[in-house]
Amino acid sequence: MKVLVTGGGGFVGGAVIDQLLERGWAVRSVARGDYPDLVAKGVEVMRGDLADDDVATRAVYGCGGVFHVAAKAGVSGSAADYERSNVVATHRVVAAAKAAGIERLIYTSTPSVVHGGGDVEGVDESAPYPAHFTAPYPETKARAEQFVLGQADDRLGTVAIRPHLVWGPGDTQLVPRIIEQARAGKVRFVGDGSNVVDTTFIDNAAAAHLAAFDRLAPAAPISGKAYFIAQDEPRPIRDIVNDLLDAAGVAPVTKTIPPAVAYAAGSAAEWFFSRFRPGEDPPMTRFLAEQLATAHWFDLTAARRDLGYSPEVSFREGIERLRASYA
Image (cartoon, rainbow, N blue to C red):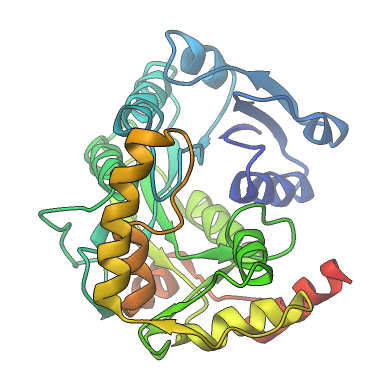
């Protein structure tokens, strides 16, 4: 079987591709950049912007399934850019898949689609989308997810996978940013760092995508549903951050900042950067302050029951693999 993985040059997309290649499947990847490392692995790499006309149509041609991983992620930036990358591109991928007669589409979502600013503790997939978001990333991902799930019918099966805070060797976003900021002495816990959070090791996140794909078909019981994915090992955020830093040989973080101060600073930074330093990420935003100050962990019962999901790599083993990668 040949499958399409959008965003195959990214962290999660690349891990999905690696696990597909281990199965001996043919893979096509579409992304806006060049990825010679994927070509070296035998991946058919197509360059293009999925929000452009006909790119999605050409990308799905000859494929038997789609993993739509590509997205614009971040805590700041132009709302129009998020709209184009996360909503417009998703509409075009789904439309192309339907036109091509593809029967299985896995959409990479995020638990942020149910985070409205307060604690999210042990919730399952019945948790509603909030009425208001403080950043375009979760807002556009929520709209795209609802669209994908709403397109499930007797011709196309769709599932949304919501992996939470994905990390591990090869990460170019979460862990490197924490390390860079910690080395510069700029990391503070918002509050005392006792808020409980869960995460997802990269191999577990990719495996969840494949597990859903294996069980998906038009009108299958899982079609049209979303699933939270994580380690199922929630722990205080200060422990998570300092374990990640320790794996990279960086001193632990001890400094804190009150949540109200962080939120106000985020609001001010958003205003300043949008006007005087557009294109740059502010050091704090309202969305980031909310994420750092609140608890967010999830009930994984549905993923275990419906997908057969069980995190094969524990948090502690993941930390040791990360330590080895930095060594």
